[in-house]
Length: 72
Image: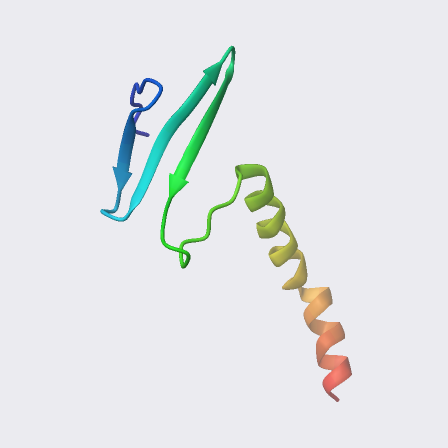
């Protein structure tokens, strides 16, 4: 993991086309702005984890067996 220090108003660039800017710092919260192409999905980590878990559950063997039963 790369750890960087940034102050309010400072930015960093990822992959030449994503800019992350520190907008505000209040106590233990940091407001971050992200400027990226619309084709780049951006999720909060907890939402991303939920999506991953739902996708894994949808592809479990029970689900596949049920799907196979529907196709017969």
